[in-house]
Image 1 (cartoon, rainbow, N blue to C red):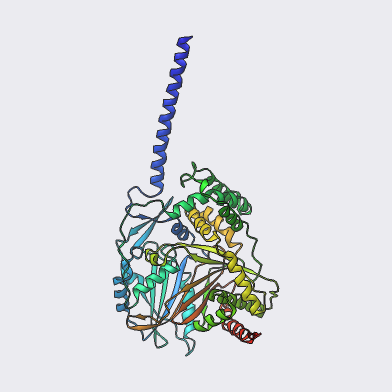
Image 2 (image 1 turned 120 degrees about the vertical axis):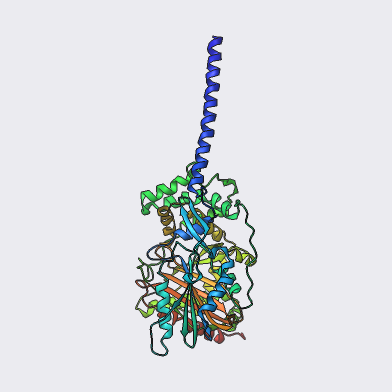
Length: 513
């Protein structure tokens, strides 16, 4: 009996030792597999963040994830001088010297041994147009470049110089969104112009768990739990891929500390995941593979401030109200009934201190704003926009959207596309409002007269609206998919009349009563 007990105990101990050894071996295998998958074996470079990886993988035949911009300069600038400035200033930022190497778990920034400034700074010659139609030719070329992929064998950016444009020059800029967001690129701009300063030296350090990692880890389960259910129509395969992330042992995200999640965060996550589908207008549908851009002359910023002050609204409220009015007028001009119609626009929200913008990367969240395009009275509309914007203040949705992008950066491309398409189906437009310098800048001795940019859209979104304040004016720009909106200039042409209408009605209000 004693012998049997001792033998049983010995066998149990042996099983425990074997189990412990097996677990240790499994951990070693898992660690090595993770290291191999994350590109850490035999590859020297810096790992791309989860959010930046999401932007890298978001390219599609209908939407390339590039920020596209235009500068117009007077007098003109020379090609050689531009190359020299780029080499002296832009290449101080490591991201503009590095190419991207993708692997199963993400991507790595690697120095481009074959970096050639003249590969990235190229000459452009616009087709001859009658006097007064030069801008149309420039807009056409920008639309073409917006759908021309960057070369992934080299750093993901390119400058196109039109040396002779309206008595000066035009500089077209294409930068992949994985390099930086709009606020960060303002910092890059300020370092390029005359009198600009190079970015502070970055100290190389080992990657550590930061805010992005915490957000990604603590959001994976609640987001995927809700998204898997919401993605039923997207296909069983996509849902299964997302469902794998529920079990941390099967994923690559590490452990989850669900205790960090507050009720507010979960509620906001549910609001994002359960957003109703957007109104069906002609601006929503399946996009094609061609883009067009348009922009208007600047509206004086002082006038926008005056209207906002009179109505006790922010500048942002005034401008977004004008966007809603312009889109509504455009649809009505085509015979559409917009009564009671609303469209949802995703608006980026900066999540980093401005003095940290030089570090590049993407540090912004998104909030969904429903624009009342069917509301004709401009005063009622601006107050309704203000009410909706105020309701978004204090929301954790920008942080959650940032976390969602971090989660998306962990997924294989089909699963990422399925997750992000959920939001594409519920959104008509992406809108940005970026504050630029108040005074006009100098570049290579010339005056930067006008600056405009367009943001990329993801999934099936076919409309991007950009608002940029610069040099005392506010500039509106639109980029559209040609299948959904073949002539974006017609939208642009409605912005100034909408602002003029709001200004006039504001003056007519009974202020003395």
